Every structure is written in C-alpha cells, then in structure tokens.
Length: 135
View 1 (cartoon, rainbow, N blue to C red):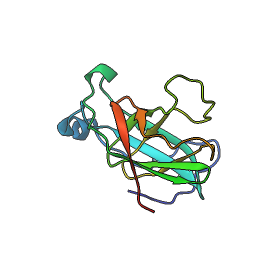
View 2: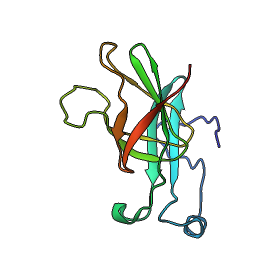
View 3: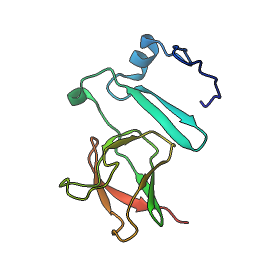
C-alpha cells in the first residue's frame, strides 16, 4: 500500500504494522516486510524485515527487467531481490552497486553511457539474467 504522510522532525511515527502471527502464518522462510520512504522523485530510505537467518530463507526466483535511458539503468522485479550486484570483480567504479529490489518498485542507478548494458547480475537470490524492457 502507498500513503502520503507528514513526518515531524526528530520523532518516530508508526505508519503500518503487521503482527508476528501474520508473518508466521505466511511463512517466515519466504515472507517479510519492507518500507520505502520517498520524497518527490527521490528515494530517501528503504528497510526490509526478514526474520529467519539468511541461510534459512527461501527466495523466489526473480525475473528482473532492465530499462536503459542514456546514463541510467532502471531495474524492476515482481519479487524481492536481495543484494543486486553488477560489478562482479569490484573494478568498475559503479557508484551504487549493491541494492535490493522490492516487488513492483523501480530502482534507478547512474550508469556510464559508454559502458555496455549488463546482461546478468549477481544477487543474494541467484545469478540472474536480465530481461530488457520494451520502450
């Protein structure tokens, strides 16, 4: 769900809640909760809550879509994707090279125009092939 809120400075505000019993009923191995805080066109913060150890999580196989627009790459996925990584060797100097994707929420990064569009990425879920979106 999406909602507009006013957040007072230096305070905590509960915006949503889900009970442990609800998450447990869904299955802690393959369900969690997440929040994305945005302001205008910019993303301010994201957070995810997964209650099992990483080794015990059962990730869905993602189908990650990629759209390129000059010096930007935009990623989307229909399932949660943990730790998207484009620079397998750590040599490319890509500024934002480790991020999560949340279901149905696009994520864009700066990417040099002269650099070839990636065809695969490494994630916490698996090595994934990218599917280019039609413009």
